[in-house]
Image (tube, rainbow, N blue to C red):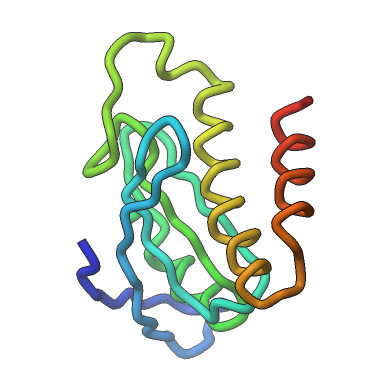
Length: 135
């Protein structure tokens, strides 16, 4: 699923158009796995782009190009859409479940990077996760 693609957009009105590479990944966010498109430097601050109904990550293609020059951009296709998992039942789409998906994506994108860089320990990650889920 790591199909490379590019997207283009302008960082400001009248500015030249920028084209950036976008990496496609399947990300296990805990309860479901999401189809996520990533762009920009891996060590840059994270921006998560969330689409509405009935859209997908592609809705953000122009903004991804503009933001990826300074940020790590993650544009998931949310549960129930496109190539992301589609759990059964209305309860699978409650707001707390959708927020949990995004939280899982952020933890995997930012915290795992921090562990690999040595800027945070596994114990720190456990504390971050416990605080994030409200324990």
